[in-house]
Amino acid sequence: MLTRNLLLRLSESQSLKNFLTRFKSFNNVTRRFVAGEEIADAVEAIRALNKKGAGASFDHLGESIKSEAETRVEVGEYLRLLESIRDCELDSNVSVKLTQLGLDIDGELCLENARTIIEAAGRLGNFVRIDMEDSTKTGATIRIFERLRTDFDNVGIVIQSYLYRSEKDIDHLIEIGARVRLCKGAYNEPASVAFPRKADVDGNYVRLMEKLLESGKYHGIATHDEAMIAATKSHARARGVSADKFEFQMLFGIRRDLQERLIKEGYRVRVYVPYGRFWYPYFMRRLAERPANVGFVLRNMLKG
Ligand SMILES: Cc1cc2nc3c(=O)[nH]c(=O)nc-3n(C[C@H](O)[C@H](O)[C@H](O)COP(=O)(O)OP(=O)(O)OC[C@H]3O[C@@H](n4cnc5c(N)ncnc54)[C@H](O)[C@@H]3O)c2cc1C
Image (tube, rainbow, N blue to C red; front, side, top):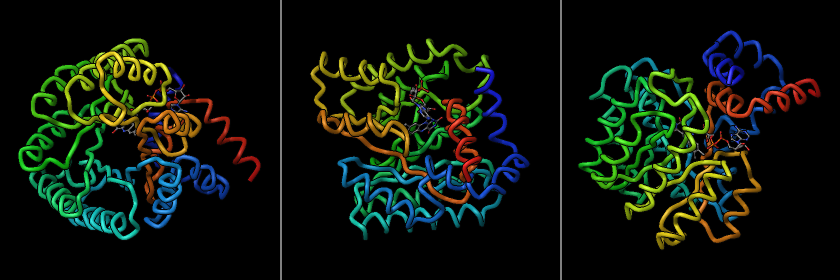
């Protein structure tokens, strides 16, 4: 837990980022979790995933946006992504963080930017997933999602099982017919808002997953945890929810063996494919989830 918290704190450190990126071999290591810096890199990664029978979700890594102009650039990137999906005939949707669209600058600006992307996605028969960030953004993210949901069907949200508030949020989201991606949560949260013990996070995950499967909507069960996956399969069987009524979701480069196994078993799998220049915080969150990954990184850096 100490290592996890430390790595999450370091994910915000600009000086560590500057130090690490001086090593050429470090950039190769990041490729384990990040498809590359350009749209074309992510397109290639998604083509390969589609060939194996997995769907995908593009994520442009662009945290800490400070100006309205930067949010417009971000919208442009997402519009290009949606066109690439159509032109390259990919099985993929897109995931976006509201801070990239201006959540920290002005809620109305953020809403307008999100609308532009969701409208374009709708015209192309595509879907937009709004990622969930740290707990200081949860309330605002859900409020903006609710406003979008009244006008659009092709938008979904993410809920994190580590937050105490999530059960209430899920009940409400089910009531308004939302499509939810359920994950455990990736940020460094205090015990005042989030379960500190993994067993409680997992217990809540199972409880929320059961509610989602019973809701009759199409949801994403996002996890690499075999116990969560087994619980999902077993609940779906018990409630007669067929394998085409939900999907498992995993992150690019993590548990590829499990992704392939689930596809062979007849389940739907979608892989989240991040790309872009601002990969550092995302990469550090992946290390924090499995501190053994730090060994992998160091070994590869020394080789380089
Ligand atoms: C598709 C998708 C979208 C996500 N979107 C969000 C989001 O919007 N907001 C948010 O806060 N979080 C998001 N997450 C991250 C999520 O919250 C967790 O941090 C992450 O998925 C790890 O949790 P886990 O369910 O895999 O379980 P854990 O208990 O953390 O891990 C279970 C097992 O999975 C494997 N594993 C997990 N992580 C790694 C890793 N980094 N490297 C290698 N093996 C690993 C290990 O075998 C581990 O034992 C997303 C995750 C996925 C899969």
